[in-house]
Amino acid sequence: MKKLSLDLKSFLQVVREFFRALGQGRTYNITKNWYCFFGILWGIPVPFVTIGIDLYSSAISPTVQNVMQIITLHPFHFFFILHPLLFGIVFGAMGTVRYNKEQKIQELDKLKSNFLSMVSHELRTPLTTIQGYISFLRSQKPGELNQKQEECLKISEEETEHLNRLIEDLLDLSRIEIGAFKVNLKSVDMKEVINKAIFALQIFADNQKVILENNLPNDLPNVYADKERLFQVVTNLIENSIKFNRRGGKTSINAFIPGKNNKITFCITDTGIGIPEDSLDKIFDKFYQVDSSQKRKYAGCGLGLAIAKRILELHQGKIWVESKIEEGSKFFFEIPTYSLKNNPL
Ligand code: ADP
Figure 1 (spheres, helix red, strand yellow):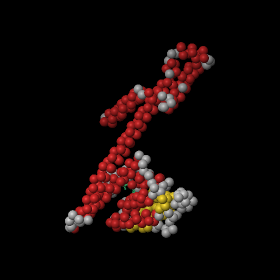
Figure 2: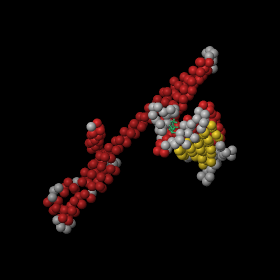
Figure 3: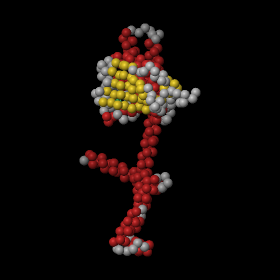
């Protein structure tokens, strides 16, 4: 019974939208609304077929005079003659309903982007102040700290850092959505970037009892990249490989020297929980998490890979994944090597 009332509600909604569209000029505008044009085309054969059948069944030859005669004899043919118009109107109204929906989605998207950007900016200001006070206390200028106070301060520091990264991710997302996300490409030594990321994540790996193995070849050519942004990509991938690993597991980082296309492929392999096959594409969507339940045990907000994907696209590169449940995942990304051709300076 409940389902029936729900269906009736959506049916009434469709009817309302349809009648609203009938009152909009766009519905009847062939040049702006291709649905209307398509409807007219769709309706054109109808009068030909119905009059043709009538002529055929009455065994009359199809001359103009006979057609006129049959129409006056059977006035219901007027209804079929009007069909191209009727189809034009019905299809046109459907086109307008769709247009109205797209407009609404665009408006909502814009509102959401503005909201995202506003909230992230507003959060960043007080957070900077909090971080300032934490470092002030840490400097012990306002007084010496005892061990308990040191511990409390350490936790506050970690949590504010976590919040800071979340806000940075939200800001990056809003930049991506308004098309303001840019990269500054130069010659970059990826060994340096990856070593820095490993160094930053070593304590996390030790806590999780995950071994980090750096297998980068010594003769790795420089890439044409934005150093900070690639550090962000690599940090996210290595952090995920630790976060979604098992205790005693391993993360290894490899690179394959370019073949013909002059792009280096990096690979971050883990021995963790793996990703179900039907989620392999979705994990690069914003806010997507394989386990998004309230009880999920992994921190994060599902933005890292979406941002990494955009960063790599801006490098003329790409990112992809291979994974097996309970065995682990391999995240690959590819970026062009640096050459005088892609940077004539
Ligand atoms: P976050 O880690 O903040 O949730 P990401 O965009 O980095 O967001 O990752 C999206 C989702 O992809 C994760 O929530 C997780 O479900 C899945 N994922 C990413 N990396 C791995 C990995 N190495 N092993 C298993 N699952 C992963």
